Length: 376
Picture 1 (tube, rainbow, N blue to C red):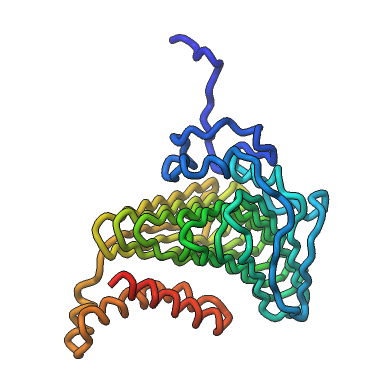
Picture 2: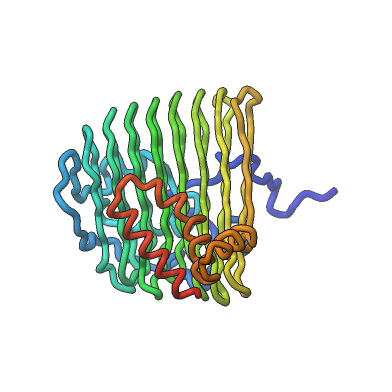
C-alpha cells in the first residue's frame, strides 16, 4: 500500500462534521461533481458561486404590525452568525459580501407580517436576513419574493425558549430569476419552529433549510410545496440536527412536475446526535409527475447516534396520477381534465393549508390553479 500523495484523506463521517466558514475563498472551487452540487446546474450559477455580488441594502415593503420590528443592522451585530454558518461556497459568497442584514423581530403575540421584495433586478446580489422570536413570543413572518433576481442569500432564524414561530419563504420570481438560499434555524428550549418553503417561480431556485434543535423540548416542522414547469429547476436540501433530549421534527415536502426539462431535487438529512435521547422524527418527500420529460431526484438520509429514541423514519415516492382517484371523480360526472386538476390540487394543498394566514392560503391556491391550468 502506498500513501496518497496529498497525505491521509479522511471522508466526512457525519453530517455535523462538514466544513463551515463565512469566507468564500476558504472553500475549494466548485467543479460540479461534489455531493452538494452534482444535482445542480452549476454552469448557470457561476456568478453567484464565485463572482462579485452587490451586497447593499435593497427596497422592501412591509406593513406596520404590532409586536414586530423591521430594521437594517450592521454585519457586526451579535445576532449575525448565531443560527448557523455556511457549509458551501455560494452561501459563503453571499455571507462575505452583504453590507447590512435585514432584521425582523417578533415579540409577544405578534400579528402576521409579510416582507416583500420585488425590485432586486437581474444583477448578481447578496442578501442576509435575521429573523428573531423572543422568549415565549408567537408570530408568522412571510418572506415574499417576486420580480427578477440573481440572488445569493442567507437567512438566520432564532427561536428563543418557549416561542412559537412560523416562517414562510415564498418564491414567486419571474421566469428568468435565479435564487440560491441557505436558511439556518436555531430552536431553543420548548420552542417550536414551523418553516414552510413555497417555490413556484424562477428559472433556478435552490433553498436549503437547516434546523438545529439545540435545547431540550425543541420542535421543528419543515414543510415545502413546489411546482416545476418546463425547463425549471427547483431544489431543496433539508437538514435537521437533533442535538438535545426530547426533541421532535417532521419534514414534509410535496411537489409536482410538468413539461419537458422540468426538474426537482430534494435531499433530506436528519441527524440524531448522541445526546438527543427521546427523539421523535420523520421525514418524507412526495412528487407527482404530470408529463413526460421530467426528472425528480429524491434522497432521504437518516443518521442515528443513540439507540434511546421514540421513533425515526423516512419515506420518498415519485409517481403519476392515482387512476382510482380519477375513476372515482369521473364516475360522479366530473370531466377528466377537471378531475386531474382536483387530484393534483388536493395532493399539494396539504402543505398550503398549514400556513396560518387565510389570505396567503387563498393566494397560493389561485397560483397553483393557474399552474395546473397551464399544464392541461
